[in-house]
Image (cartoon, rainbow, N blue to C red; front, side, top):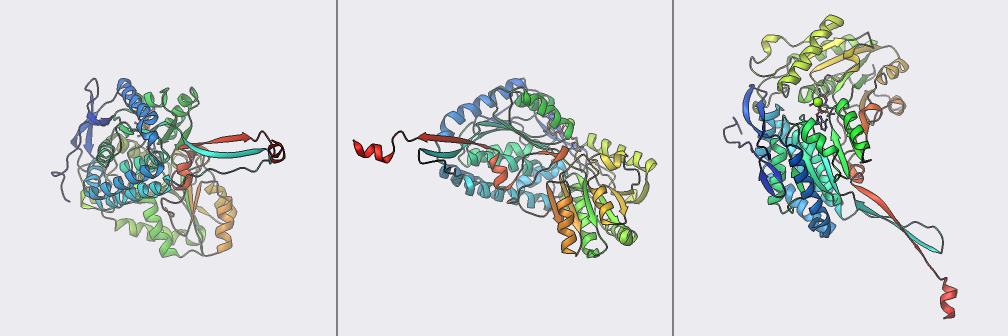
Length: 492
Ligand code: NAI
Ligand code: MG
């Protein structure tokens, strides 16, 4: 698919089985970051719209959805996966045009999203409890019970993939869903709800309210009808959500980004480590919670690594996202301002090792040149903050202990990677890293079957895999006292 003429940007959100405008008819504008041009807009939902959506999700949860067997839930989610496959080009175009992720990559994301539905559908009727051996006087067992209506607040960096990552397990577990996409990227979430309805999901089970975080998002978080919240986004917003959720003790899954170290030892396969690192740092133009934003290099290979890394960066194609370049633009204007600010300040504070030539950058849209800085001041913002753009901080180390200290020198704890051909070192190092995921000789390893999620200020709770599904159920324990022993029963 080329150009955006054949793609329809939905202009209504989806509540209780219907496409609706905001009750006050307000809208938020949306843009194509490859050009800066408008691509329409979506409803700016208010607290009143949130009430309607939560009411619908509550009625569906206590009504029809609860009567569906786990197997029937699986069947409809499998049908939705097929429907997503059939609309892959369209969904990918919506996200590519509206967010700026290269089209070929977005197609892969949508393919993956359909598989995520299949994975969770397959688990729906295998959410088994346990029987607990206590004594001959008791039968004790557990059941996994769906939480109820759940709110899912997702960011703009992978609009469809992030939505599906938490919505699929929630639905498989038997919860109902209200989904709030980021205000910048509302379209594919709306299509998800429309397609789910077409696939046979009952009205009210999956609702989408578009709009602002501080309005619709905050209203969901504080809503008395919401029994669980999944949030992916910034640490600052995660902290706000945690405070509000405390008011009703609503359980949370928080995925709050990272400042992820990629560590290269001299015994690594260097060409492989370099190509993996370029991808790790610049996939999605660095707008990835698990981007390699700190690259730690052993002194023995640092200069060679940097030279060859820079050569690779010069070869990256950069351009309009629908043309499937290696690097698209940043997702929106204010994010471009944020990243540019970091780069400008970094140029004053650190040694610039590499920056892509300005004349290689498209002259329209929100394109930010890949840049690499050497950092020696570990209190600097470039070392500490999640920049969320094509900007890498490089540091050097001379031994394993120093590498470990640098790697863990962050308030975040999402992912880390280590490149080495020494198996003992790989495991030893992996065990000492303070992150939720560790990748050895690669990056972004592990599929949707493997749990991911941070520690420290990267958040808590896991996404993906069976661990991701577990957040949408709670364990109910049922204990039965056997009033008579078998000998007493015999006497009658
Ligand atoms: P954000 O965390 O403010 O927004 C993410 C989602 O939360 C959006 O849907 C937004 O509407 C919603 N939201 C915002 N304020 C809210 C509130 N008070 N209550 C409920 N929901 C609310 O992220 P933002 O401002 O778009 O980006 C800022 C920075 O956050 C980025 O530069 C990046 O560093 C980080 N980020 C991290 C992501 C990750 O994958 N962990 C994804 C997106 C951003
Ligand atoms: Mg924000």
